[in-house]
Length: 313
Image (cartoon, rainbow, N blue to C red):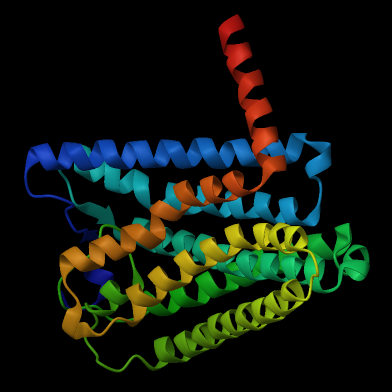
């Protein structure tokens, strides 16, 4: 293939070689996606319907749940379709759309986690200024900035990736369209525009990471100054879910994109990509709900109401 314009479709990585394993992967992906849809849907409904949950922390959690729903609905349905029907095809336009949406939702998730870190920092380190620094208008502006930044980042990366000339076939070594595997199909070893945009994205991501680390250093210092052990435990309990989610996201994403080529393999790439793109949308709501009694109670009440309505029907 001489260039990208001659490519009408890409071939995604098959999750398994045998029909039995393909059906098993379909069932596993179906279970994970249903769990993610249910868990994030319950969180969104509980926060939207519960007046006592209309606080900055739960407002950002609602936005995070939306990003989770978007990310898992971008990659998993196509993988399920391919496993069920034993196909690997994805159209050129479909691949571009999938890459853009995946980058959009995954970037939004990272930016929202950064904002949620700021929420925890103000809550613990500057509690007297919490209402001023995190008013309803300020929260709306920060959430809008996160989504807008994610959109711009996804647009730049997608446009630069698909502007490259591709001449090394059309087989991607991943079960969804991802930048590193598309770049492997490029004719050139020097991607000047892609490098420029990637440097910008890397600096932005690194800036968010430094902010998160600095904020948690200040949070831990403030918590350790709390005289009562009960107060320390309460403060830590509000940070542990966020810290666990950030650690999972950063560690898997960093390893997926920064691991040395010497240890790269199709099975390892597939495992890591599942860990950072499929598992978090289903796991993160569980992490947050288990550690937050208010959210757990609201989700439980909402689930009870839904079950009662279903019984009536």
